Length: 555
Image (cartoon, rainbow, N blue to C red; front, side, top):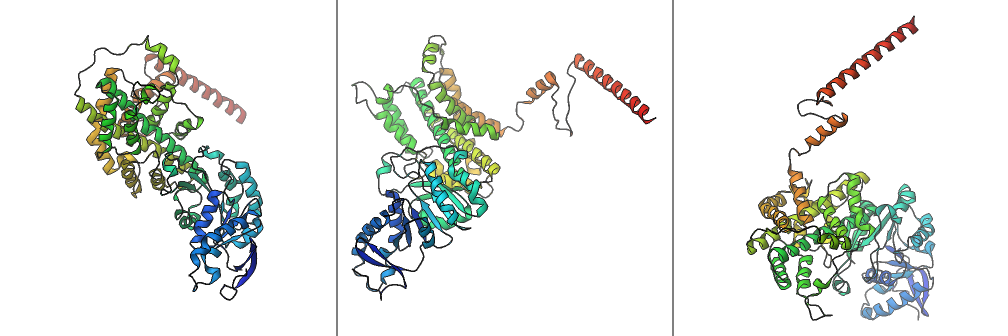
């Protein structure tokens, strides 16, 4: 079944697929795809159907022909009436096969854009791909490692220095002018994952100029945000995202406990209050929506109560949960709210210790009377302020790391992807934070004009909540830590001068002054003065003796 030659573009070759001879155009392909996984095939078909020429290859050299044959069987039916379109320019002829790396590279136009599928979770396999491919590439070529492909796959968290793409880029690709990218898939709600009308979302890391070439190819298929100039930056942003997620969740848990203890509300009340908050202006979000649903859900294993009341109060920890705190310490970035959320989880796993201590350490008995409506309103405002602070801390870590690593991190793009449907962080608040970060003179989230005005307006409600929690003996680590962050950041003179004086008193470590330049150390007591005089006398005597010896040598 030979295609009509007169209707085709100039012939490069004829390819036999499923017993049919297809005439191939001499035009080069726009993109190359290696690894014909389910997503790899979908990505190839997506672009080929829009008449973007695609060259595909696979570990199994015979598999591309099967994929192309199936694709053409599906698309040729839609082209029966396209008599005025040359055969070689039709969508059904926009996908061609390659028997190996050499042919794939030859068939893709320079700068080549090659997408690698099927290596997620297998760094050694990607190294093997790179070893086979790299010697065939030229300066300016682009290679993209696709992230998790199956929506049900557990996301594998890697510390940014362990990224194989980051390391290969530093070891080989950068010096040769080859652009290596890595895509990190966004974790999404397990129901949303199965909805076909909502696209996947990815953060991608790699050189900015090369990304502009990739951008239209990627964003026509999925929601993609450029995290920064290296694969490591995408991993780092994913780490910050997880830290913020726990910083966002914990205030709601503290608020629910305060509603239970302080107001004597029950689960249905929690659900109603959270639904009301979610219909308001401050807190509409995915986390708040599901929290309301959780408190309404009755237990289906027993006739008693709600599921949440039967859950053990422990949250497992992974090593990756601590990375943001470690990075903040290394970079010298204060993140008390994120640390407090992490430490709450540390306390949660100390279940046996807490049970024992509960019979020894007593809670307050003389508690204040409160107005329930005001407590509910104050809680909503305190949650808002705490979440804003959690974001401010997370963004500060990412910006500090970006400066050290020269990533040119794109905070706005990260926030946009975190706010993609199905993400844990979806919220109206995130839109406001994104608007603040987009401003040219952005420095810190808390001092943005609109954000700071809102915090100033709500701060008294924020301040009342830790005080109320302490009176009732309720731990509220993120409410307290976020308020401490706010007050510390706005403090013109920190209450820390005594610490410097203590260290100077103890070891003579010295201090700086407002009124003059230089470094000073004081004699705080008579003993310090005597010690200083003795040292001065000893130094003078030592100098005098040295001068005498030098004079003798000179003579």
